[in-house]
Length: 305
Image (cartoon, rainbow, N blue to C red; front, side, top):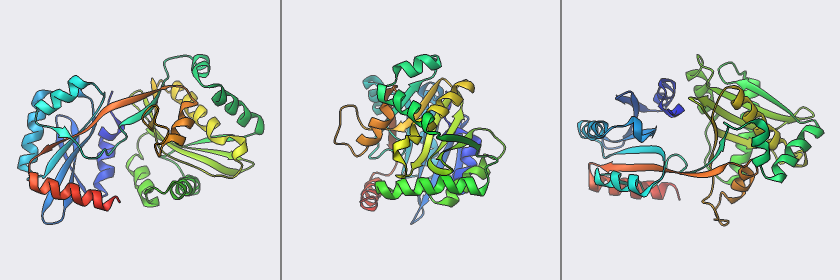
């Protein structure tokens, strides 16, 4: 299945943020320009079966032709030691950082609604019913037609969560440009869960090539007792099934069993909906300029401290 990050619309979106877009065998490569006339290449979220050995060689040649420091290949296939060793034999090494989450929480949507509910944890089912009884309302707004009012509702909830978790967030302009790039599609929707007219939880979800993807979200600490996020994600699951999606990828989670991970709390929430942890192969770098790569890696680690 093809990722939303490999659509023409996503490439157009990223080009608005200083990425130059290149193509290889129907896939989009993001070229990031750096100071001192340097650059690197990033090929987001491709499946190994869609990317042949010939494509690998073309990718290496593009890196050379573009005078790139390195090219980062991101694979969404489930991790296996054999695939890892194969990539190493092709000249790639594990990237020093992941751009997309390597561990993801995925719910199988091929089951019936009743079966999906049954495989949830008891607390998850209870909180969905509680939110319904309390009168929580969930509204869906296609990103292609969303108005400023509801996009700002979502962004306010998103920003509240970003500040609460101490993470680096996206700008409001980022979401405006995303909406503009996907104006002619029905790939994205914003969900807002409200209680007595007050927005309490929001989510930005893509629906593309059989996969519903929870890209961004946020929630308020107000009225936490009504469990608004639970009903919101249940509505997303319901809508995804109606759109014939086969999986709901809730994205980032901690490694199973790691209770000390900074995402442990988020993981406990996502696990209430059942599903499973999936480790993807993730990012691998083919290095063209070893010294420049070492300097870039050092600069990135310093920047993220």
